[in-house]
Length: 158
Image (cartoon, rainbow, N blue to C red):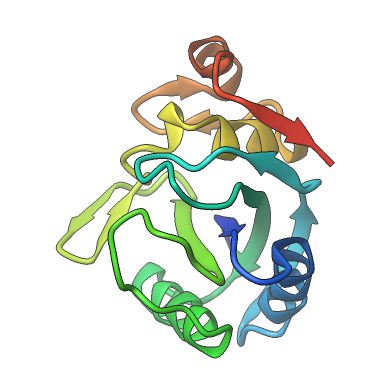
């Protein structure tokens, strides 16, 4: 089994219900099982500021899917939840990002592991720290070491 971490985010419709439903959808992925889910967190948008706040969370999965197959399954889930990619950092019904896959490094055109900005975002680090406080980001160090760097980013646990 491989351990993968997935970030979930939504800010259109009823985002809290969407993220909760996405936890259920992740549990139904082939060759995978959800082993931990974080609380939900409300955060301000990053980049394009003129949009609703996001609801964010993180899930840990055990999976036998290869990283690119897992990414394909996540993109399929986004589509099933009505995800449209109209503008970069724009509002979305559901966003699923593969953050980590074991301690693996990948640099492919469609997938980078670890996720290249996970250590810069409170909406990822805080839920990760909740479910895996001793987690080490390959090539970056511990989550605990990065949390102070994002302390000024507004995040509220629901």
